[in-house]
Image 1 (cartoon, helix red, strand yellow):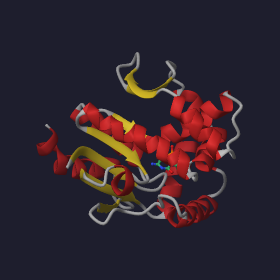
Image 2 (cartoon, rainbow, N blue to C red):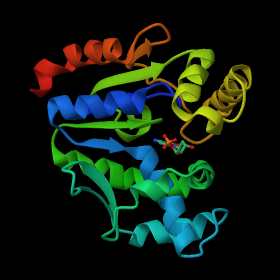
Image 3 (cartoon, rainbow, N blue to C red):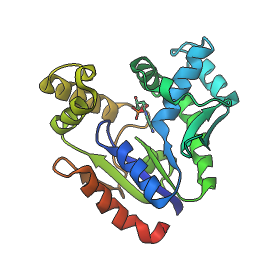
Image 4 (cartoon, rainbow, N blue to C red):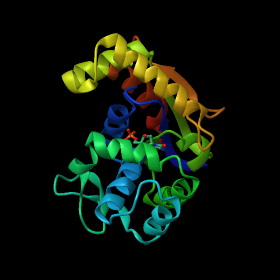
Length: 222
Ligand code: DC
């Protein structure tokens, strides 16, 4: 078994906040694999490589040095060729690029190799869409975090306000459509591993969800 806490689930399910809280409380690295797809899109943009060009993207990733390193705040942050582009990775343009490049098998393969290498770090919490199914099928703990589209829309509106892209109903409909697309894509579709624990936190607070997971893992990790 790999010393990995795999946290998968759709966007706005609260999985990033949970993964971060676990990492802080357990004092283990937190790897946000979405950032790696965002970094691939960002690096391609910097190097004038098209998001449509699967083989150039894969060649680029083979040479790109992507590591999680302690930043000046003492947090593990993604470092690409010696720089920490965290802020630039959050833009909606880069999010769209990440979503595009994440559909290519060659890109997923290149990042999979990098993600699997991270088990050298010892215990870690890794968050994404396919950690329990594809990256670490032997992870010691697997959680699949979800919440209803309406609840996720509520959270997104609370977090992003006008930038969320419409009314509560509109945002909920967009989230449901994205779930459908992510769950039905041929490569690494979004789905719980058979042995993952499904956690619908629609009517739980973040702290309640955190405590539930923390109590399950603490004895093994600490
Ligand atoms: O979690 P995020 O929004 O930062 O992810 C960015 C994109 O990368 C998103 O479109 C989903 C994709 N992704 C993926 O396909 N597999 C992962 N393990 C993580 C993210």
